Length: 66
Image 1 (tube, rainbow, N blue to C red):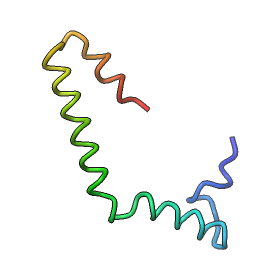
Image 2 (image 1 turned 180 degrees about the vertical axis):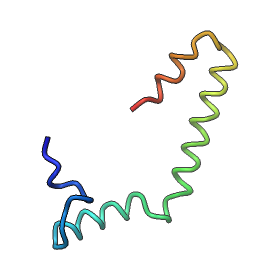
Image 3 (image 1 turned 90 degrees about the vertical axis):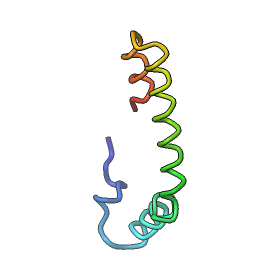
C-alpha cells in the first residue's frame, strides 16, 4: 500500500500544498455545520432504529462501520 501521497507523509512542496488545500476545502471550519447536521441525522436514525427493534442492535451499529 503506497502511503507516499498521504498528507501527513508529504514534505513541503507543491504536492503538499495541493493536498492541504483540498483537505482544508472539504474539512475546514467553514464546513463543520454541514457535518454536524449529517451527524445529528445519523444519530437520530440509529436511536430510532434501536428503539423500534432493539434485538437488532448489532445490525443497527454495523450499518455505521466504515
